[in-house]
Length: 356
Ligand code: UD1
Ligand code: UDP
Image 1 (cartoon, rainbow, N blue to C red):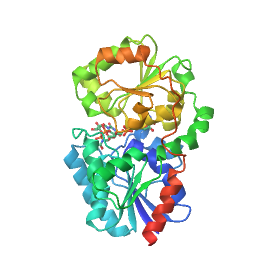
Image 2: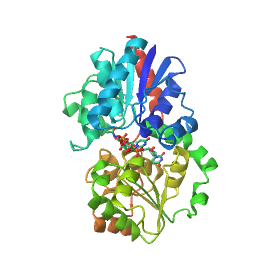
Image 3: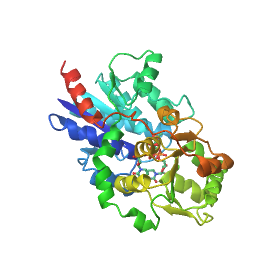
């Protein structure tokens, strides 16, 4: 059996690693990188660290408006699919690369498999929410990480080809956690003590594209009273620089380049708390048992909030500060993202379904 897997953005490289590893034990995979992310620290570093095979195609699409970026991907992916003629196309998550891959395949009548299906924030102003809904509705196999995701699909009438397999990011973490602990020197490099610093990531347009919100977030972090490590996403760097905020950064905030996966895991694992608007980071905080303060009004990872380990604070200065000072989960986090075997489940189901 031959599949084409489509990736393009940072979290997709991490998600594809465990699936690719399992799938290639018995089948052929053609890996397509759309080129949505292209800086070394946003792309290549993950291929190196996670031993992901070199992409067979790099479409080099790069950045652009939603329409132009997605449109350019659509045409280029179509060419690859016509040439490769795979048995199925595998897409991950909720980026423009996901939607372009799913749509190109569906129009060519190639079965589409979606990893991380059924996630919903119910906020259509998020570009990812549009990508999620459309991708799910043109997918033939929908691999859900959580029961909530499967329920979301059912409530939209999608019940065929739905599989609850657990979360591939849990696989990635289980595989790499000990390696990160052994190899990463990031705490020493930055000069922070375990348990005595905060980690923050911000890249959602709802925060970065609003001068007021990003200023409020940085204002709260500046008053946190402990070191804050801030690996800055290139989108965020662009906006911070445009607003003139990079040069006015409060002293306790250590602005650094985006980290590789192993350093990021290690840094998060030893943080006192994590503040983020990232989907993946909310989940990882939960899996690592680190309290998470989410700089959004909603989340698709509702289990983390229900379990008491994640609090939604939006971008209000006072709410963020209050959470930094006093958000302390009491219950133990329970496992809700699977058992680290999602990759092998996906490979098994894919090969069975596609052969039938
Ligand atoms: C994208 C995804 C988002 C995901 C995030 C993961 C969409 C709509 N958004 O957001 O769901 O959470 O990736 O990180 O698909 N840039 C660089 N170098 C790079 C990549 C980007 O400088 O390697 C800059 C460019 O200025 C670009 C901006 O970042 O315009 C945004 O990049 P883009 O891929 O369009 O969206 P993200 O914000 O990264
Ligand atoms: N990540 C990383 N380096 C960083 C920031 C994030 O390796 O500097 C990892 C993080 O651990 C998680 C993934 O990137 O596995 C999340 O990606 P991102 O926040 O870009 O996107 P989202 O999950 O919001 O789509």
